[in-house]
Image 1 (cartoon, protein in one colour):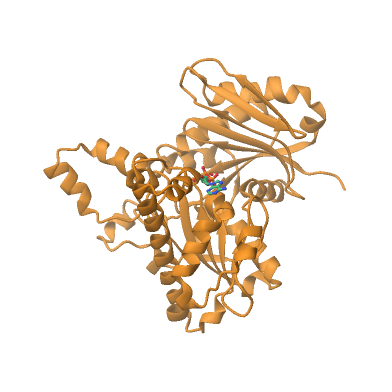
Image 2: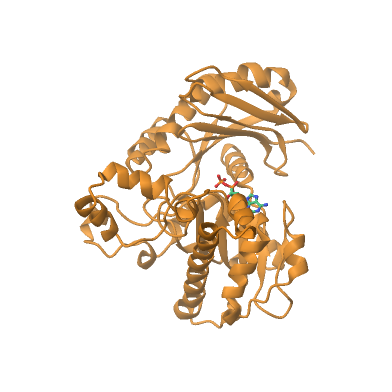
Length: 406
Ligand code: ADP
């Protein structure tokens, strides 16, 4: 079968992930990461045919130089791959209300992505730099933007309007948008396949637990509610982000404790979550190791992480019952994904124990067997179903890109 290769680019504020993905199978011919942009130690790592490589990019490198390196140095060794690349797919974090699905990039689209930049000031400008650089390096290839927010544009008003003056939504677009759309979409499709049900008839709660974490209620393949909000700060406890909190804490910190707004922004985004509570690390693996050795901060951080997540799951399960007047069995599966969801049997065990009242009964052997890229069911038969499904956002981007280009 001939391949349909797509170069997938995910430009973050100080890094760039790239992969050449076959849209038909999801397999990655080549993948890599350029990071530490703007610093002295900018570098690039990549993997091809199972072999790992790395190189320095030189000081103060950014997206343009990294893309030029990928094109001129890395890809020049593999002309056979380059010849097969049919298009470039860009991950774009924020598409506001403008983008409800992926689009072919033209000047109007670039302008619209720029218009949404206020909603994702760290991400959208970086995506635009990536898009411009890719256009310069691959002038003949079509380029597609795939938005993290698009999947959640199916949410009903009651899920996305905040209880603040409505004109802040009408005039200033302040509302819940949600993120991790490609991941939630991917695992909901895979879950339907695993369950042997049509997607349109499948109800899923999907928990994407990585450094960033979000949970989405998905009914018949469509997002009906999600935990991230205007920005990726709201919702679950994350590696360094606080998730939900009383907004008055911000005023208290500024007015009473003398922090500046910039301090508070940095604290809530970069110094909170697992890191803030544990005073040890943002990384779940380090937290788990410290829990084993009795580190009090780590124990508390993991407990709060799981408790907050279980609370959201319970809320969404109640929503399936309350909003759709259907029995609990109509929730077909709770799905764990992302680095923590796919690998941490401990977190999954703690969550399902907290949710016992909803008839989740953990199967220990299955829970241990589904780690490090293996998918499957982790609950006992006859109760509520919980699944682990490794996510593949790059494949979603490649699929959308090819379908638009064709
Ligand atoms: P990102 O949001 O940056 O894409 P990932 O999805 O890669 O992040 O998830 C990173 C998180 O997954 C980190 O907290 C890491 O510690 C956690 N993780 C990865 N492997 C394991 C593991 N074996 N056990 C527990 N946590 C893990």
